[in-house]
Image (cartoon, rainbow, N blue to C red; front, side, top):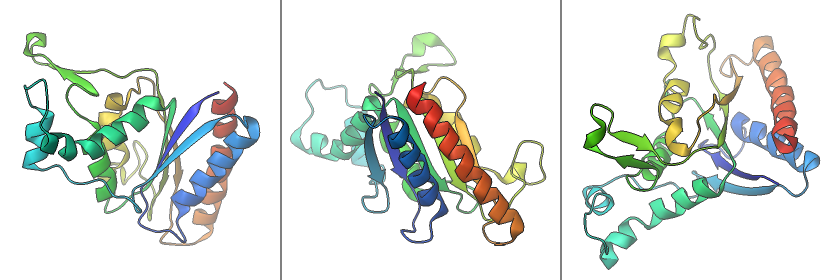
Length: 215
């Protein structure tokens, strides 16, 4: 039995392709393994707070016992980190906004990537003092993009700051292996390319879900 954390980052409730992809994925997991556990973190309903000066002071505090105010400042971060730690599979259902990730998802990463929680810091390591402390998790990225040709070597690859950003920080989530990426492209065009891309993505999400549920 595996535990899945599904992070919804779309600002849309209706007409959201990433939410639709995530539903397809979850339904396929439940069909393959009825005992699978799920936790959904919807960043539209409950957006993570932005990092503040007080948050930084609390997170980097050298005091063994935090003050009541410091604990309150870090409460949201503690909750989000606990969800990540409990998950075997992390599913990020996120659209591409302005060629990057939605602000709410960036805030989620900023709350989760935290010293002494998901990484350690030691200057004795030299030029690479940061080391992740979580391992063994699987990452699934379900995306929708208004345009296309964002893959490696394609003409819009240099503008793809969503997947490259996630890839740069995924090890802080405990992801050591390559992530599973499923895209729906050409949303803004709404043409046959989009319909084909969406149909292929749904099929791929279903197959991946079954594989992860039973593997």
